[in-house]
Image 1: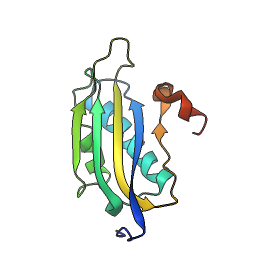
Image 2 (image 1 turned 180 degrees about the vertical axis):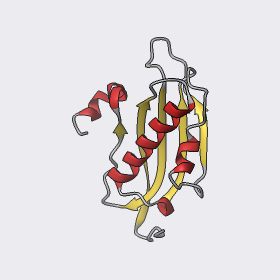
Image 3 (image 1 turned 45 degrees about the vertical axis):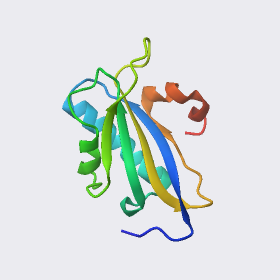
Length: 128
């Protein structure tokens, strides 16, 4: 793992994905896909990650999304899961993430909204 340089700064990148079902396989599979895409698009090394916060809508309770992050090698990163605000009419089965990491000052964070979750941030959809 590379260590952050003194020329780096802390960035935060957001993302979301909709799980197909409220079951362990759907939650972990969707979260892994989202995390891999966030890391790849932003060229983030695990050693540069400060922390990761996951939220889920109330209808997802079969597994913690953080388990997926551990499965892809983020075993030394502080992770936490929380509940999303239950807004009437909001998209169901959504897993959201905010990932804090060190990156170069000139870096431009690439937020990742996959599949149906792209509707949550139409302003970013054209960039994906």
